[in-house]
Length: 282
Image 1 (cartoon, rainbow, N blue to C red):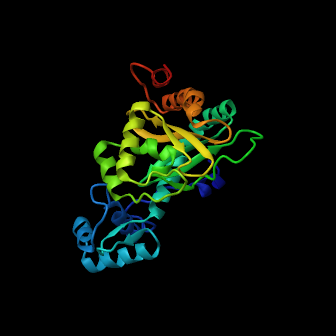
Image 2 (spheres, rainbow, N blue to C red):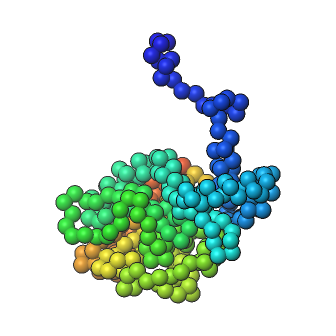
Image 3 (cartoon, rainbow, N blue to C red):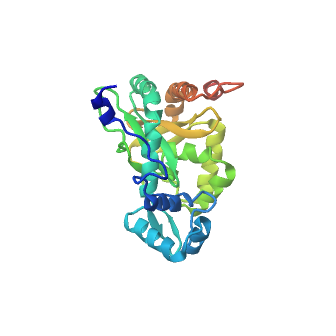
């Protein structure tokens, strides 16, 4: 090994090395105390969990708030901010899901003439991880860009991801959601949203009838991993002038579901029994 190679090598510091930062360790430990089971914590909760003094805990928490990683709610408890979830989305994107899906998304866009997006659910929002436009596509189909967020209740991707959440998690999330109007046909009541999600579970696909953006229709399908978990969704968006709403499922769903199956297979998913596309298009 040459001296130059030795000089450029790096190693992970151990807990006993001077390079190891105990302050950073404590800060990250505080962030890790927040879980789906306990999303909001007070200073005493965190201090007890980590066996730290309340004054020390408060000092670290205030620093994390100032840096934008924690935020305080009206009950004076703390929760993770969207800055943390943005980091999580970057990490998820770097795991290879967009690269695994990209070729299938390109093919899907070429076949259908629509804009194809890949997204994941983050609380009440869906985050766009990848998007493919057909070459020389005319007209604008949507306004979503990579990293953009949209309210889950009014987007096809968001609705299909909400529908495939475990029932308890779905109900808890809907209870907390504020169904603000985004497009001319946005669902604005929780009862109507729950009914829509039940319909989506039966049909597999979700359709956005100008609910997010005026003059845009979209259709989305879930992506599954090796554990049969719904981890993401893909969506085709087209201008409403391009086809009728009634024709979207017939024209686009078979292509969409075929692509979703191929991407899910690359994620290790193996479905048994009847195929989703075949069920839909009988």
